[in-house]
Picture 1: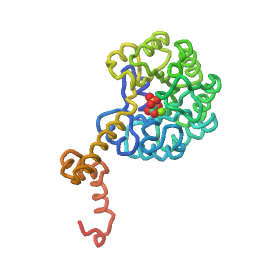
Picture 2: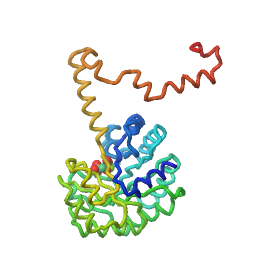
Picture 3: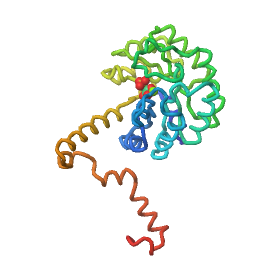
Picture 4: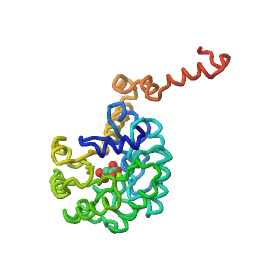
Length: 296
Ligand code: SPV
Ligand code: MG
């Protein structure tokens, strides 16, 4: 199955599925090795790993380069968090073409304005996109894809921006009607009540994706019970690496020695394994003339 077909199957399967954030080739590979069936190419995590803010400070082609490394490094599908689509319908059409070329299975776009602002920073003051304009953007994305399995997920920011259930439902139905393969309903409340209320009224009108960053204590069974299709663990590889890197940097700096961390961090051999250095060694034995390959 192609990566895009694999991702579509995650959305359409009756089972609750999970994908985890990655932000570069290495983290993507680690997510795959852990057993996940898909990867969230998080805008927050990719921008943070590049040392910039999430407000579209990294250009869309710079993000594309990162997601290409992620795609090359893995065999499971990636959904790119494409923020607001980096422009209007026309920018989105070109984005879809480029994502397809790079083997990215899906993209998620959100109904806010370019340049984007993070949903967890002062959300109430964030203007939403016009419903018709955003619906047509989804339509343009769906019309422009050449791989019929490429998925477009429409993210509704109504709850984030302080609107209620009616606005969330109106937008979700409009985007589904426009061709979205799934709806991502976002919430920043500390419990799942907004999502639960939405799911009741939505009544199975299409696959729903959620991002429980702010309601992490919700048991997975609850998402199953209310009919969610896909859960995104949106930033946990980045956060884990920040904690590990801060601690390692501090300890090496304070002790002026590597012995404070040696034995607790990945070995150099583990780096080589993750890079599949063994494959290159095999290839050298086959393709390098013996005179240039003294190791054989
Ligand atoms: C991201 O991971 O970049 C997201 C999810 O968009 S959130 O940060 O929850 O808005
Ligand atoms: Mg994002």
